[in-house]
Length: 379
Image 1 (spheres, rainbow, N blue to C red):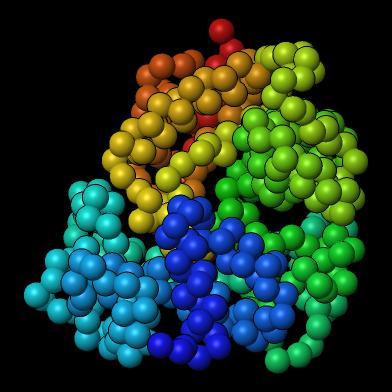
Image 2: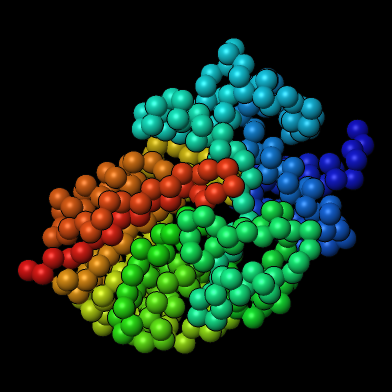
């Protein structure tokens, strides 16, 4: 059977995604690199449909038999009445909201079935496109004035003091304002988590699981160029991107430290603030990574809980007495959040400074994040 041009390429991507078991975004990016003749509109349509189908795969599969192909899934997805299908009482609640059963059960246990359904449906929507003004270089109001005045409407985020959202998706990385380091792409809830790190000029801060430095970039301006920022991660390749971002943002009082570096040992018990943005299930960010929900299982969750506790203990060794440590995840599961906080408080000489932060994916708002701020008591 001969498929229309875009559907042909979409099915190729889905077949590769199945065969190689790699994240969907990497699979799509690689395919587009290998097929440079695809235009921007073709890419947008193909990627958008791929993400949509993966989001709703559970609901689509509930209408088909177990041996369904991607062609059959796609054909049904393109004509499915989602409002009708998602209220079909012949299928289970987890199928109605297109979530894996194990994950849906955990959400229902934590929040009740109706709230769990609402969270799942919100997680199946497309996430808003949000940026954060780089306060080191420009204010949010000034940035809004400098952004292109075209068909894309921009508005201030309601909770983050630095955030701006776009009414339509666009390639932000080609804008001159991005190349000048005036903004970074960052979800609003992620910005709010970063804002919980509240140093004063002259403090020393360690971002222990820094990744490419997104949260460090969000609070760096608070130091006013005084004090020192340290970015650490076990993934060497991602720290290379962190260096690029720091340079573009104009942040000069930062050091990127490899986990094997001797410098790391010298920071023990010297940090005023440590951020632990722990590896987690990512259940708060499924709008952006819908394929992650189909990889979820309770064994993985247990493994992550152990890793989170180990990493937190390692990170705590860098906090000076009287200093602060922030634990955060992009999860909405109590097992990775509230239960971990209880464990930390029972195990270590810590006090919580304020109620924990928790957000959930909401239409036109931020993702699901959790954070708790602790102070290390002086012995």
